[in-house]
Image (tube, rainbow, N blue to C red):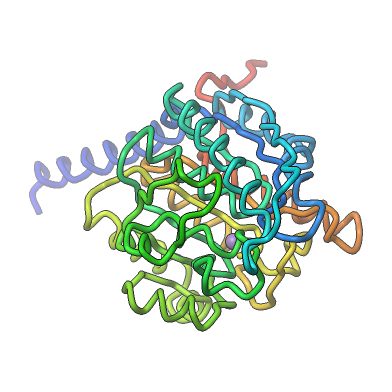
Length: 345
Ligand SMILES: [Mn+2]
């Protein structure tokens, strides 16, 4: 190797190093538009409506700002009581879920139109119906990453609990349009997501009908078996390769805290053993953040009343916050603000 080419190589290495350190000192400007959705009627356990306030009280806004992220908190949506909301067959609280999601759809759409990365604090996972619909109304076609112990893809006719938090994906998919009956307070909703634009991660409690639907539609899934087999880094690489092969669409991350192992995040309505570790859970958010395509995030199913102890609740809420911080550029190596200067003696 001549001196000349050796120098060129070193120059390249220096340039790469400079670029990298610039990247760390000047993270892309981000802003979070937080929408609180204290809604619990997509399932039958009280307490999940307290999720937004607990997550805020643990310092979400301050911690996002410490990352250099601008924050606009739109506050909590209010949901009217439905005086007459009788079950339709097994299906519970249909009218309340329909009305709440219509409101949420409008709020998420507004947050997107204001230029923010939307953050929906749930509340139960039925809220993904309005969140994804509103996101899509603002930006068009989406990629959806659904991180959950459950597939939440029952239709109103396959559910055996009647809880709509186990069904939101079926309401959103074009391919299942003919399988979802007309429901009161849902006339505003049109399916807006293609099955090929969805990836599930963390599955470990899937009903037979859900499994049939996933196979029938050929939906990309990484159950906990694949997380074990491939490791989370490869799962995320394959997730992003798979989604971007259909075009680089804005990503909607719908994160159910029950994806995380109950030893870390026990305060949730339907915990299932054998979940993601804290590190795997956070890695998913870090990786999606790095794509630069993350456009909206739901963080749902934190239920402070489901913890056995205050430490259970603290651990669950603090994990939820770390997942959200990962979405906005927190990296575990540490961060500093772009204008930081070392004190001079
Ligand atoms: Mn869920």
